[in-house]
Image (cartoon, rainbow, N blue to C red):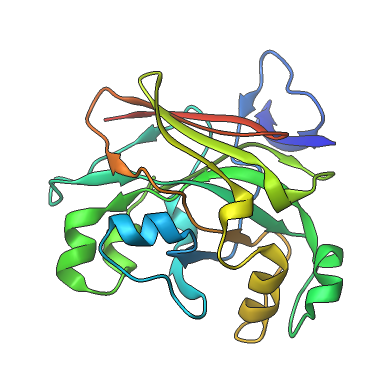
Length: 227
């Protein structure tokens, strides 16, 4: 089932359809966004890194969340802002020390994400916080798909209609069940929290005026413009 989150007459609603007069929101309002770096071997390679032996995790702030059709704002202090299309897991129940065999009981569903990155700042800082944390740097949507097997989904990113990333979730080094177990051994995940599972190869820059789309089979297409 696809669940949309929208605002109508000043009130936030959730449902399987969005009324014509309503404004679509990001499908969840997380307390935290846990992102996974270099979870596709070819992406690690294209950035000059080796594939990791265990997940590399970092946080993006909730203020980075952007709804479908929202505008990604390039910060003036960065000269290189990249798209990174990703599958996102949305947590449905409080989760701590979860075992892989039970992981699906704690996931409400899946959505599309764009882990927008100020690449030059990421390289300059070594760690990821500033380069990944700007407002508008985490588009999510358009919906949460609650009934989906995430093990082998096609994932594409397009910029101005041209395909830039074309991968499958089966290419992940660490699949969803492994990530849930690894992350909840570190921190408690709360309902609505998001895990970004990593991006396939093919990342590249976004410029003002671009239209970027992340499409994942079974979920839909997340579309945003760049300013």
